[in-house]
Image (cartoon, rainbow over all chains, first blue to last red; front, side):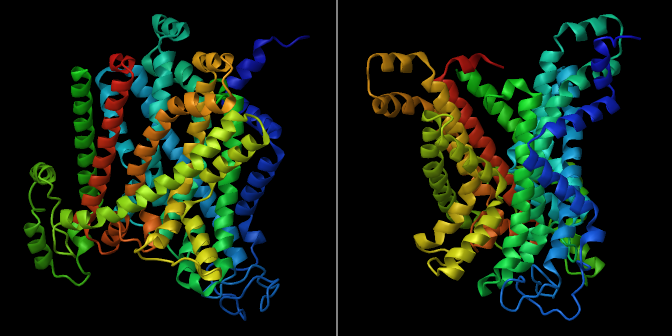
Length: 302
Length: 306
């Protein structure tokens, strides 16, 4: 084996581990700031138990309620970003909140992407009445403003973090179904699919070996752009009191708890959690834009 | 043309049927609406009586047909807590939501169109970069957080604007900005790409070749055509904003339909919630239908597709 055949690399990229390796390689080429922010947030969320100075759900012993950040008068370095209405440490709550946001953002996107991609492929590849039914349902679900639909579902099903994941997945799959179906419609007419069918491959095999690998890039790009939307949706639901229930430290919930005393000017209760949401969504958007340019040449001009 | 319209109307009716069936099923699959509504201390026979009163003891198909019959006659059922019919409550609140939606649309246009045009005319310049940044922030800043920060700055610190309620224009400014912010970004993006497309077309090149000054080419020739899709989207966005402003209306205590939905949820008034959600879907299906027909009138090629 003096030389590696040219198609080895391509073959490697078709396996799951190969894809993962390619993804890691791609991430290293991503804009530095984005990788640092996203990587940092993931790290903070994963190591919350080690980093956070206090239990996020319990008042800090000896701390006052509504203590301001340390650089203001009355602030203390023991609670660097201040305390809330129960005397809980804001910093610790922000750190644990990153975990909630990331889990809901990623898992919600995964559920939405899974449902949408599967339905899009089935709809586009099988066509006929299956296609009609799936697309009419997609139209109907798209007609409801996402946030209204999510609030409605959350109110009916009841608040918990995992319920929110399922609810947001159930709300946001429609865009995937539409886009993926469109791609499958054109893939279906391509020679390699026709040949596989003539060679006797079953429908399931054609979908698994020929259709799915070719729509994964699009699904990935859509997913990267959905994460931010899902994170904001979770914060909105938590803010309205139909999302993550207290005393869990979710950023949207922190904003909601800060609202009654907003007029008293305790700005740190409102500014810090919102800034965290802004930061994480901004980073995922930038990452998504970069990924789109990389993976999807057709939309580069948008 | 009439064939196109008929097909579109049929599609919309099917969409509405599926939508209402979905909401109908979700309400009934996710739990007992009566148990949700009633006090925890209610006796079983009371629950039974309420169920009968609401027709909830009948079979689902029968209930659905009644539900649809009522919906078509504009009767959305009786609100559990408010007592008056849901439709009455709804249409009482709707004008407020329309006001807010209109103001937010104006704000999104005032930010989005000029920024989009500058960005397209001076493409890849410093202005373009700024505009792209604004578009990105539009998607990344949660509207409700923007609302809270606006209250903090303009009501708490500067004391310029009232925090909540409705009345004169000063009550509208902050909620409209918080609501319109996200949509300003989408206006900006669309204006930019639409302008770029038009500016690259033959008739613009001809206008330039004729020696017309830049301003005339952009303001008189390009502007008109580039803005057709922008104003269409603005129309659709306005309908979305009227219906999806729940969180902004809650923050600013704006008495619109979003707040009605919120109140309905916390008072466990499921006919009210169901009614508001169905109406939102209805309005959006109708505006999409209108846009489709409008486009078919403007551009005959569209009639032939699908």
